[in-house]
Length: 251
Image (cartoon, rainbow, N blue to C red; front, side):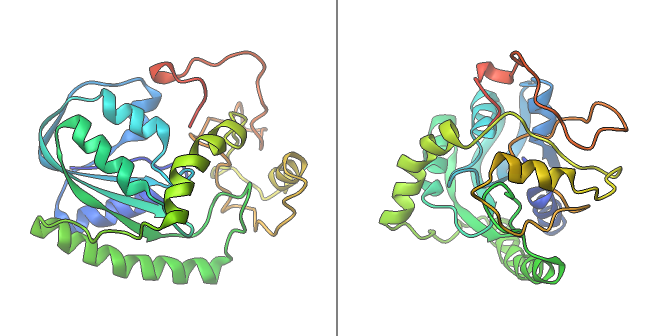
């Protein structure tokens, strides 16, 4: 079974393409997280988790959900992480998670996809993004063969920088960078530019080309529905919003 968490579509795309190669069923973790659904899952042997990279590890909200689930008959787990450049030492924490769940850790693979964290990084243009996806498809074919053969992924890079980013920087990133005032664009987007203006207002020191428009992605964490057809930007609400699993903020 392939379980994916995807706020912008990168990880969903890889999960669906991977399923075409391995024949595994696909399950959207995000939908279950939003509905607080922690019912047991029949895993039938192997699990493949496909997630984005949040602060050089898998998203905390996805990790918390995985811990809460009873994966019946699951004995092995692979991790495929999408990123704009690197995943740090995420493998260490994925292996630890597998140990807690009583599953054999089968490795973590990094797949570079078009950058979409517009709050801090430049988003590639259409042609550049297409080239990145093409390279990702080639790597995904190799990963699919590896999973089908039941063998572990190659050990990813693990230098001092990677260890530092996943251990020390990760909690600082969540404390000071991850916010709850997320917004998104959907099929109703008319490329009015309001989201770009808001991004620069919130991050004036990050005046980079974000290539916003119909390809706009969520700034932080889970998507939230727009209030009505006239809204293009999700305004920050005052007060507290109930979150799953007792979390203090969306991851």
